Amino acid sequence: MRHWHQVIARLAVATGLACAFGAAGAVPSKAEQGRVWDEAARAATKGPADVPLLDEAVLHLPAGEIFVPQPQADRLLALFGNPGSHPDMAGVILPRDPRATWFMPVRFQASGFIKDDDARTWNADEMLRSLQVGTEEQNRERQKAGMPALEAVGWSEAPRYDAAAHRLAWALSSRVAGAKDDAPAMANYNTYALGRDGYFTLNLVTALADLPALRPVAEQQIAALEFKQGKRYADFDARTDRVAPDGLSSLVVGLSSPTPTGRAASASLVKGGVIAAALLVAAGVVVLLRRRRAA
Image (cartoon, rainbow, N blue to C red; front, side, top):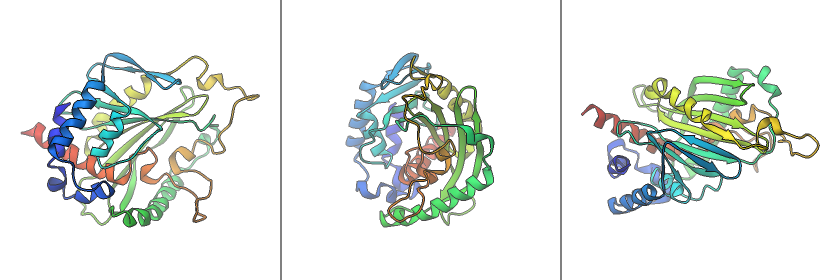
């Protein structure tokens, strides 16, 4: 895992994204980065292994990967430009291969049972327009926080739902607003596993150019998540269980409940919990790792 923290120290200068650390202040020192990564390494579970995820599921972690639990996962995300506490995050999956260029936060939302009827009638073009509008609205908040605005470019993969396995996947390409056409784009490949009490998200963050090769990695991860007996989607009991007020499409375009401004909340580019700063820092991470691989 040391190969990751060795490039973080040069990240802001090499990518011109020092502002991504925004509210977190200055880029952490090399000593601080090393301490965080060393703590994460000591707490990590190395695959192959079965990793309990709260009281909901088990992750069958494959060989060649590690799972960093809380609170060390929060400290890693702080290095990626996403400071603060993330109580919905069980941990972060990282590759052990020094040539790899991705990471994947694992989160659980206790939303209640999500009905999936709307998957039969949703329109991908309308969903994309909703995401783009929501992104523009959220850019005002990003700019107030000192973070650059983002642009939702388009689907890297339109939303698709496996009704038999109760799995949802979609990918949106994004970039800094106003960036040159040849600027590196990011892809946040979002995968969801629905259960009785809510849903897990396993969202793979990588460079857009790497997404085609890494899509099988994301699919492998979501398939490796197994809900416990009694927590599966099929275990839903309509007489006793809480039903989420929003349907499946809300996991892509956001919630219908009003925000303080009266607008509908939008998933935009942060639905998976990776905020704009983290996307920007991740962009720098994968670019630098690709350069090291080619060296």
